[in-house]
Image 1 (cartoon, helix red, strand yellow):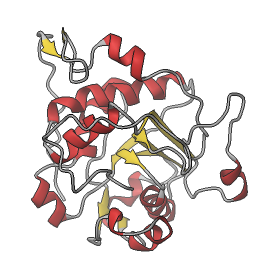
Image 2 (cartoon, rainbow, N blue to C red):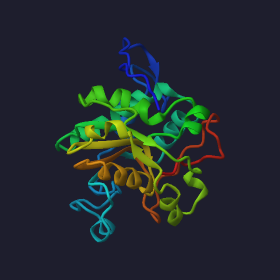
Image 3 (cartoon, rainbow, N blue to C red):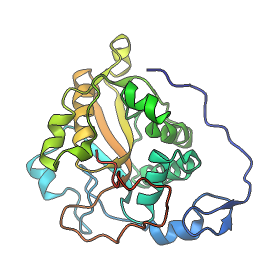
Image 4 (spheres, one colour):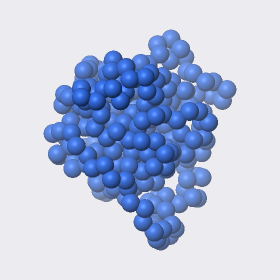
Length: 259
């Protein structure tokens, strides 16, 4: 799988409509909306689910740790971020990728922990890549890598098995759906040996996709593996704020990009 290797262009800061409040500003998501809709949130360091203040690791991860070492999410998968992620993913709103990547970069820096040595976009299968025309994870990494001064390896992790969309399966069946779906490029596994890497995606739901990618990377010799996502779906049973449905461009048949 090939992706262009040129960095994202830095265009002059021109007036733009905020994608959330539709006010004029210099960013696709204005500072006021960031302050209102992306407040600091305490999250489990292993799975990125929201936890009470003072808790570093949730009970589920203490009992059954995931195969990756840490997880990071910038925001919850709630309004307005759910709308923006869906617009990026299913309506090719690539202009949103910069603002969403900036959210993730800010979250990574706020942890005050060592950054990974390599960013890996969560790969799509070739049939899905042809259908969509782009990989939203790569679009995020194009901005995220330069923002953090971390190199991006866009095709080092590959999806070797096309699988049905995770939404077609109940939560307990999603791990089996993506089993053995990922593998590193066999000609470049040396780039993973002993390295600290982060797999980047748009949304983390059950963590099954990230877990399977982590297993493939661990087998290839990666020392430390993190899974990063712009948005994390709330824990089952939580009552998040309802997602906005004002955008008519979002396909109603795909309400949540489950991973």
